[in-house]
Length: 276
Ligand code: DGL
Image 1: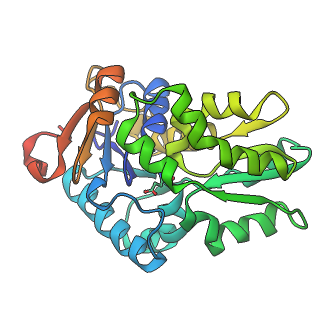
Image 2: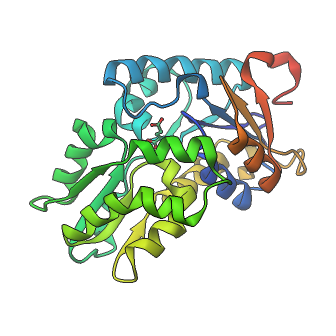
């Protein structure tokens, strides 16, 4: 059994639902999550900048926690930086990209829509996914950067009216385009998935990548643990969220709702016990 944790990384709190789902499947694994809040948001930065920032963030996560596997729980980071990260680091990565392939595989009838950041919507990676898995289809792409910022800063305080007002223009655009499946192409949106489903109505399926990513993560984690079992050393260890910058009320909300520890990355090094 390996004592090295599974690492997660996002610009902020978007990857937390992925971490929670891995914890539910492999409760004894040690999980360390790096929220790069010092550089949040990633989604409206130029590609070269996102790539540099993500390389630095992964280097810091590796330095602090020495993960044996990293879930890049951010579509923006994955579509821009995954190839380079795989070349640079001797750690397996699970990337998180918009679930175009699963949307097609589940026989999505009618048009597909993607709700994501500007960077993901405007980049070549998503265009490549669409031409590979949904060739000839016109996929409706909608950027919702403001929603990302709102979820990051005020998750737990948002009321339905405010969320509805914020989501309304995007959902209306998708509906007007005749979309029957909405792919959540930004991990932050998974936090409000139920609400998006509610607004989109019963005719529209909402799809995220959590299930596929978590299945793949647990499979790889088992493969890299001697004996094929995931960590059993300390079943009570609560996952740690390391923040590289500010951690506002959303982090207090998540910590108390899900039993997570939040710590400043700057205050932690490998000897401090964060992964022991
Ligand atoms: N959660 C990230 C994603 O999946 C983006 C958030 C941001 O813009 O920083 O794309």
